[in-house]
Length: 480
Image (cartoon, rainbow, N blue to C red; front, side, top):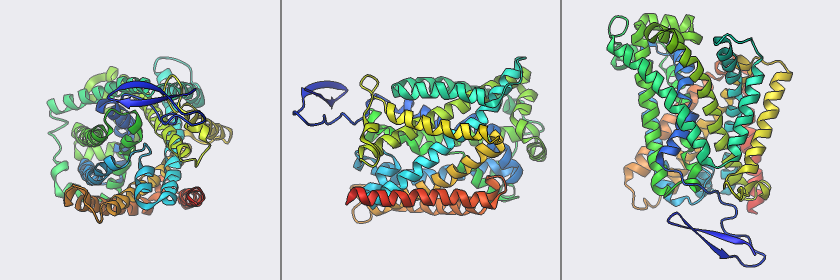
């Protein structure tokens, strides 16, 4: 005799299920996540310290210089417009699966499965690729404290083991770990921002964030491209639907709050870092010493100790990013298995933890093979392994956002379902225009994102197109 679990205001009742049948919730994840817990996981996926230390110098050097902070405001507006329709559709999507579920609901199962395959490739690629940054960062931490120079893959292996363990357990354990790490990294950067502002910067606070001349200087397109990249992960709020309290309220609130927190943090911090050097000197510093730009600024304003703390937290920020994307990718696999696209065994939650433990182990296996191949073939962990995989994710995520925007507009085309024209038609349409423009920018500059190789850029596009096509074929077989 099996037991069926019935949700009722957080209480669990156990009733006998009919003989030979499967309990209704036997393929459903369990959790009690609130807005704050989901926000921690989503913001951790965006790796704010990694963005400040890595993407911001690139935006300053190759983008629009002192006007770069304004691109975060533009990116936030585009994604808020997208989120208006995305969250309006949430009450009408009763399964956890994020983009896959939204697209399937509106555009049909085959297209939904195609998008799900693109999502899995995108998230797994980033999770694997970030190990290429985490390994060297871990080596730097050891050397900082006088330890020996160790190979990057040792730190990748250690982080992999912890990620696999946490992914196997209940999602609330991961949430608590991410909360601690994220709070620490935001706190140290906030202290740096405050010190720079209080001291008035190098010679006055930068006005580039509000100056049209600065905003439209250099390459605004490249600046916007780097800004959009920095938000990867915010869209994952809906994947935790089954593990969220009252998802109809929790998911929209977590989405908006995550976007605003990320956008405000990036805009203020990049503006403060520019102020710390002066407009022209900041661009020169980012161009000549991009890899140490954040650390050099920290040493200048909060001393060597502060810079050392940032070095350590940069490592933990990358780990938090890996853990967050691991949880997202595992839940995509779980959702696909629930639709019988993948083996049903992958959609059996852990009896005690309620986690997608088998799907999590499957993702760990794919990531382990990817990292192992990078080591065997001697790829540079950052310049090659990370860059190639991050390029794949960048294109894939923007494609997912575009497909979801089309799904939202299609879903509400004939019936507003009680929403305003602005929320489900105008705002999503404007967001779609912004996302299409971003995709054009990304594809135009994709070869630069993957190390200057046109061949690799073509491979990235080919992999994503192939994933979508395979998903379409599989979806048609499942639905027939």
